[in-house]
Image 1 (cartoon, rainbow, N blue to C red):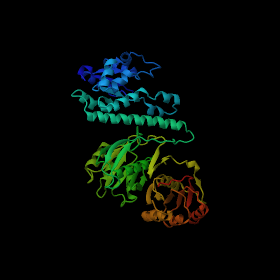
Image 2: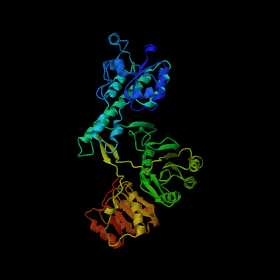
Image 3: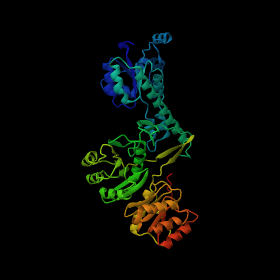
Image 4: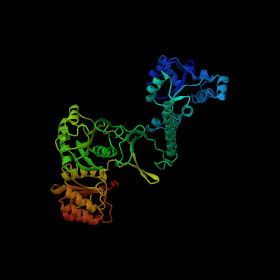
Length: 522
């Protein structure tokens, strides 16, 4: 193709970086064709634009719904000038092939994400001409470069300003283009499936689109490969929305544990710290200051805390950083809303593990995530459920024993209940004075979990409270907690043996609350 004949078609909804990119194309000898709002934007930037309607000799009609669906447009995209039949059609119909097509689609996903959006509004954001041009260009990538994202502009401009696009880059652009249309069509399909099945929040056909963030060194074990994918437009208050400020690359296990630390730390309004080991909290505490919360959280199980993941719900301050840097501690990763500059410097320079610790910040720590879902793959299928991240209605709580908990016990019960929901079932958690003192997690019987929690707590269980993620099926779990010195309990209730369990509490002088809501975590 001669340089004089270089043409680019530009029609985008996202105009990020478009002005400088288009000016670069003009400098490289391109003529630009465009439509509607994109043409106006470019003209306002002082860029000469050929209106598509003047090229096709057919006006935009039906409020702009029909403008690029024309043989002279798709012929310019799909034509193969080195094939005789195509070359004849190009000459006969006055078609000038496009070297570049720059298209991104109407913001359908952003539109349906708005609260209260009407069906009619969503339908108007279903792009027709855009996907057709994208697919045509991607199919004919041997001749045409298709750009669908602003982050592609720089590499493309560099090549077209030289020898032209390489086949390798055109193939990469085509792959990205097909991904964009697949995601777009899946979003529309999911939307219609949902509105046509309003009795269920789950569509009849589920299509998920996640973008690869990065490959991971390995999975749970070194012989397993792994990668981290993020959903489109992830919530700012999420692991995908967090920024890594320092340290080694995050591993598969790191990410799972950081998620657990993040979820628990978000439960509290008071300054809180959580210590995670294999997704379970081996320590957690609240305090008047973050440093106090950390000291008490770490003291929950100092042996297990070695090599742990930490979560904080306040900007990590210098006092807490100095405590973290004390000899004998080893931390894999930390997530917090932010870091004081001096605290960040301490963690980067002072501990023995300074070069390795992953420091993540999530400024939108407490932002509402909306209704979120979690997915678990099983052989031949996928399980989907709402995340168990909603606050329990405390108005539904019911004191079922002769004795009601004291104010101090009630505070500890509420604290313990918030942490217990994040412990693997069967979960038993002992807490005292706003800190976890013992955890029994993931055992096959609740009695075993009670025994382990008491063993972990030791003498600290005297005057502690106990939280159970599901009902006590028998009184033996309460008897075990009573041996440890527990004075109050919180659990969902709902067992056929509730009366026996209540009787055991009354015998031991234990106050007990039923919450009416279970928190299994398998």
